[in-house]
Image 1 (spheres, rainbow, N blue to C red):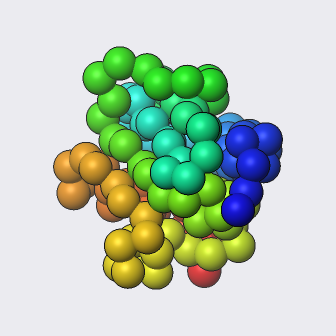
Image 2 (image 1 turned 90 degrees about the horizontal axis):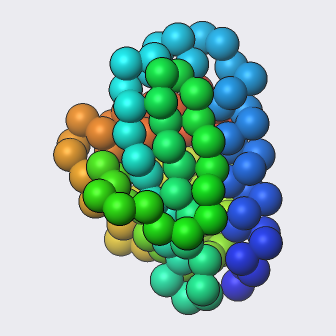
Length: 117
């Protein structure tokens, strides 16, 4: 089980890698979204705001998210540290992503661009 702080560190690392990738920022300049990330086994909720190609991380739940990502704490930490791709936990039901298929695909692509396969 990962702690709230470990999840936060993984999300901060992911956020920094996104913002330092000029190509990725340019490709997502017009994809403005709110993404909520919630652990199912520990009290840990964060929100990403992607606005004009810049990603910011906030603690807590923002209203009216475009995507909601939920999983146990270990899965969230593993996915956002890049230790596992989101595909396997998504396919086996460990990782739930609620949103449009286009938004889910975009988030998966962003993960792939940051961490590779």
